[in-house]
Image 1 (cartoon, rainbow, N blue to C red):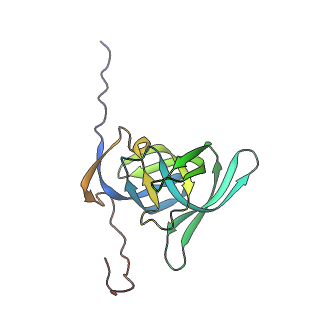
Image 2: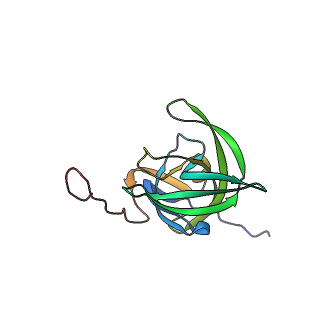
Image 3: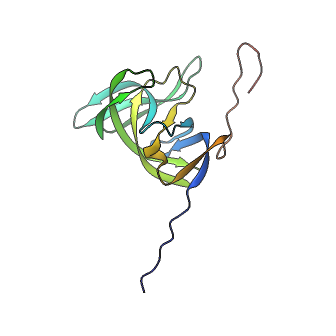
Amino acid sequence: MAAQHRKQEPLIIGWREVVSLPEWNVSGLLAKSDTGAAGSALDARKIEELPDGRIRFEVVLDRNAKPTTRTVETDVVGRTKVKSSNGTVQQRFKVRTTLRIGSVEKEVDFTLVNRKRMLCRVLLGRSALGHDFLVDSQSVFLFGPKRKRKRKKAGIED
C-alpha cells in the first residue's frame, strides 16, 4: 500500500502582512496581497545590471525622510513586460528568492520596480500566494506586528 501524503493546509494571511526575504537578510517588509495581480513586485532602486546574468540593487526597507535600504546582488531570472494598474507597460528585471510569512517559506519571483508612491514595499500576486496562502480580506498583520509610524500632520502614531 502506497503511503498517503496529506497536503498541508494553506496558511490564512491578512491582505497586509509583514514578510521576510531570509536569503537576503531582509525582514519587516510591509506587503500587500493582491489576488488581482498575476506576479509579485519588490520596491527596488539603483538597479544595476552586472556581467554573467547578475544584478545589483537596493531593496527599499522603509520609505521615510531617509529611505532605509539593503544592497542585494543576485541572478536575473528573466525580464518581463508588466502592465501596471494605470495602464503603462514597463520592462522589468525578474529575480527569485525565498519569501517567509509566518512559518511558511517558498521560492517567489519578484519584478523590481520603484514603489515610492505605494504604501507597501512588496506586492504579492497570485503566483506567490499560490496554494500556500489564503487571503482573509478583512484581516491585516496576522503574522507580525505593524511597525509604528508617526503621522507628520496629526503628530500621532498609527
